[in-house]
Amino acid sequence: MNKRNRQQALVGEVISDKMEKTVVVKVVRKIPHPIYKKFVKKFKKHSAHCDIVSPKIGDIVKIVSIRPISKQKRWRVSEIIRESIKIG
Image: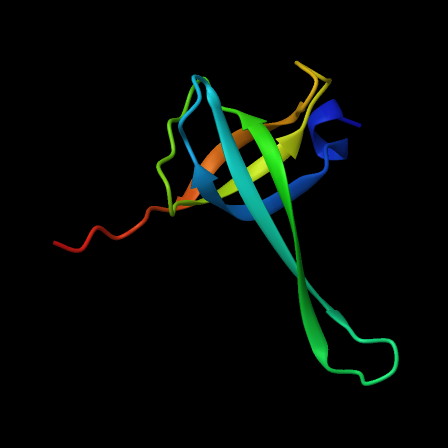
């Protein structure tokens, strides 16, 4: 089995690109409320390393898990799924 197949992958939106070679990605998941069964949005922010691709704020990206690079970075941006639309 290839090692790349075992990596965890998530899809989220870039909310910050102010750092060098790092972006902050917001991953949203919808889970049903345990009592009321209505779907509730929960989100988590991940710091992701981006050296090959350079996403901008608003882009939808795919991130994969990697070994720890720093205190916060445990993810790498693998591809840009959809680019943000600039109006104006």
